[in-house]
Length: 209
Image 1 (cartoon, rainbow, N blue to C red):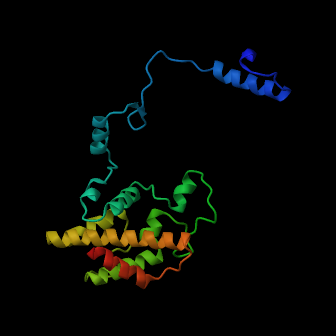
Image 2 (cartoon, helix red, strand yellow):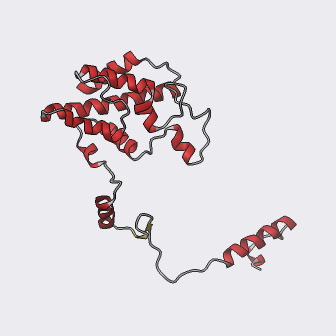
């Protein structure tokens, strides 16, 4: 019974819990094999070579390598990396994991639609206005980024022919995404109002740092 393992007699309700625990333990069949980490992607033991192979052959390729080559601060690179993996702490991120946070899932910037990476950085009225201002700054058509997403925004660098200008444009994209994220956090945690003009100025400043 295992009762000798305990320092006192069981109460009635504890006996029932012990029986349940014993049933669970007795149902476990131990294997003589050595424990190893199993990678969910391949259903086999994890290895670096297997990870590289999966990323190279997957139809949904992980696109993060270019991020580490950007001429931006390291903290922005980490932010962009998390954004592309869709693990930023947006409200839908917590919702998908069943984590309850105060308030609702409404975007703090527009107060209308639920917050997600796609909405916050591209579909929100604030984001659309900032991308329009950025396009005007770079003499691009104001509707260049209508209906865009994370993949399309980086592909827009193909619109810029000169190599140095292409690099500068990627910095502007990084600065815009980062400025939106900072403004969103400032509004949530510091209860500060969101001003498009101030955000756009910060984008220009960040792009020149």
